[in-house]
Length: 81
Image (tube, rainbow, N blue to C red; front, side, top):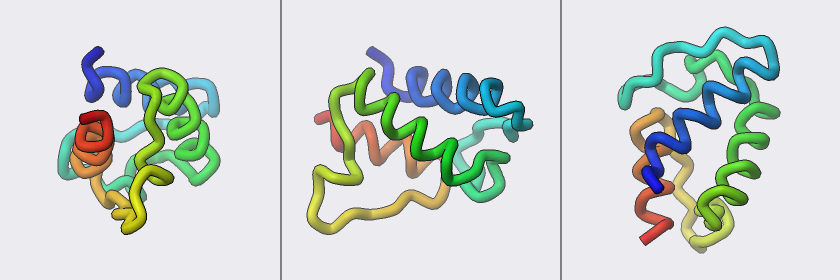
């Protein structure tokens, strides 16, 4: 499974379900500028855990919180290794 593709799908799907305008998902897009709110991110993380079988926010002691979309993708890619 392509992790980036699954993350992009979940961002897009949650934005549509919540009636929000999603900014173009580029690696340098700040998550705060994505158009999504904290509830959306909680939904995305829960769905990704189901799809990918990993929750990197609970998997590491020293949790790094991604700031950009690219960091978010790499965060999941590293956790899936």
